[in-house]
Length: 188
Image 1 (cartoon, rainbow, N blue to C red):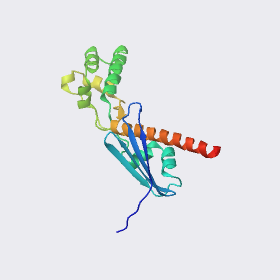
Image 2: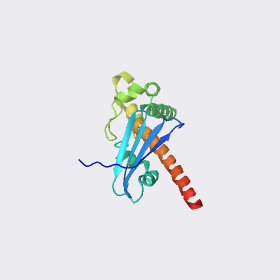
Image 3: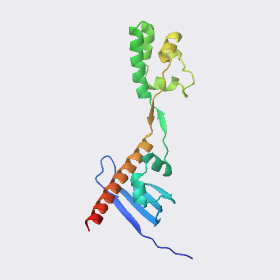
């Protein structure tokens, strides 16, 4: 049995805006090789880098948060934003009606369509067609004109945004620690 003992630095961040306390474990195995574990509210993320050219703290503080999130296994993901689509479609209905391109009945049908309605009838992919349900009471030609060129807006998933906020908080803390330590070294 081979037993190894190493030095681990633990940092705890508290009083963070919109975040629970964060605990960070930093371990440098040798220069350029290290591991970090970040824990917040019972969830943890960990990554190892074997060719950093810096300490784990220095590397993590400077690396793009998107890169780190990917190494934590949390990748950018989006989902359709039907609330934003409803706003876009209401504005489009008013514009097309004012310009006389669609009937009053169709404009009213488009304007009164709820988020649930758009979610059911919007295309799943950008290149897929919109479907005009009979329940909306919108003329086919008017519906086609109203939806022409409209893509369903997307929004970032909350999990990814949450992890990026945590990463940014850790980066700010490490930058502050690094600048404080750099200042102490130069003053000695």
